[in-house]
Length: 221
Image (tube, rainbow, N blue to C red; front, side):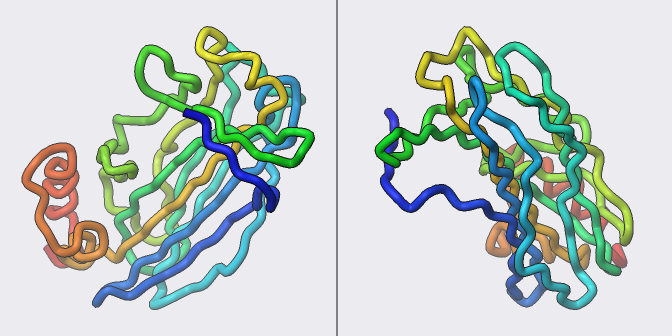
């Protein structure tokens, strides 16, 4: 079902916020805002706000992307998303990558259109890297390796495509955004459990697989 909302107009976000839960968590939010084109536009217009550094732990999202003039169906567009450990502490990271497609009417009303990436009727195809990342099925992708200072992850994804067979005329003139949120947590023993899972140990996959991989990589292990 479509969801509509009236003013204000969509905001362009790129935030990183941090919280301390007996450990230090770094959260960065980037929203990539598009410019309207023939179908859903795709641009590299980014804005960064509120970048902080706490206890030498800091993660950053990096993007390799050259925006096309238009974003047409059935074409793979390069959009490489990685995470860099820009601090001085080892870190574990997880990323939320949420595609959002909206269309603004002449009245100013904004309609959110489906931006599904799974199933036979997926609107978008994104080549998520499930070799180096695990889809936690909780909205997040978890990087399998500890990220040492100055290093960056393998790409979470590298291309995005809109599927002609699964879109309607409503998508003409729509805008495609990506909200990408990264959470980095220090690699001290079980700090990631406290930050991400309220101190609980997962008992079923895929989070059990994540825990099995990370627990043997903690600092001092």
